[in-house]
Amino acid sequence: SAKKWLGVLLCIAGAVLLLQGDRAPSGPAPSWVGDLICWLSALFYSAYVLLVRALVRDPLQFFSFLGAYVLLLGGPAVALLLHFSPAYAGPFWASFSPEVLWLLLLTGLLDNALSQFFWAQGVLLTSPTVATAGLGLTIPLSVASDLLLGHSVGPWQYAASAVVGVGFLLVNLGHHAAKEEPADDNAAPLSETRQEAAGGGRQ
Image (cartoon, rainbow, N blue to C red; front, side, top):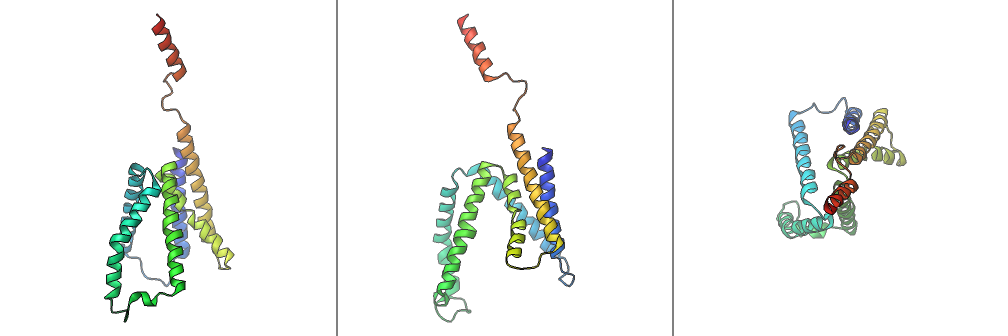
């Protein structure tokens, strides 16, 4: 629908405004390699979200098997790499303090497990477009966190937050409007079809 398309364009515009505000005049020159990597990342994410929508039925089961697979296969490989790495004189686990272990645990639980589960559930309950637009809400949330922490926020960040928020709202309105539209306006209601079938059976 037109609302959904406008919302998607506003979400993209919000990301562009944020990049404009974060661009430093003395920073490195733009690189086409970096642009290509960003496009490839967006391509892989699009394929991932479409596969989740088409194949995943239970996000909890999916991510449980995915976590077990990564732990059983990736865990030993990472342990061997760290063990033979010249950066560690002794066992790599000796450098893990309790603070580091708690940080890893919270990061894995909040940043990986819960966020991925809620995102996949949102994809299944709405659509890939709505779920992807929802990820853009990290922009206004990050601005709010900067304000709470006392960091400076520029006009570009405020503008990006407002544009992304309006875009997400329009995407949702367009999604719900498309769901409420009848599939076929010329089709007879189900009750009338049943009445006609019952009348034909009596004859």
